[in-house]
Length: 68
Image 1 (cartoon, rainbow, N blue to C red):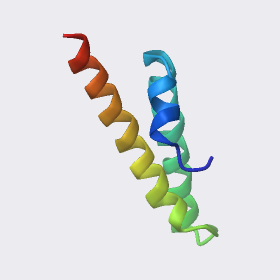
Image 2 (tube, rainbow, N blue to C red; image 1 turned 30 degrees about the horizontal axis):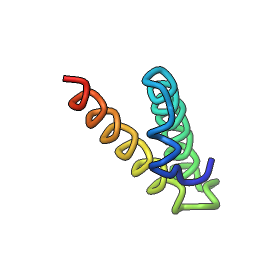
Image 3 (cartoon, rainbow, N blue to C red; image 1 turned 180 degrees about the vertical axis):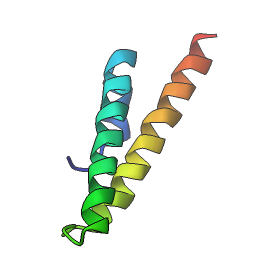
Image 4 (cartoon, helix red, strand yellow; image 1 turned 90 degrees about the horizontal axis):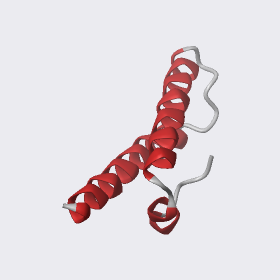
């Protein structure tokens, strides 16, 4: 999965954002295991996944604040 753009995230529904976060957390978990066993080829993907999760959570919080 490539880095997610903010416009794409904003276009998602709340449920889609939650699913995306869950998928990214699973991916990050698997990447951590790959790193520990020496099988991780693209080390920058760990950082991208972490930042994608933060990006989605930030936009979700902004959307919730906007609704109030």
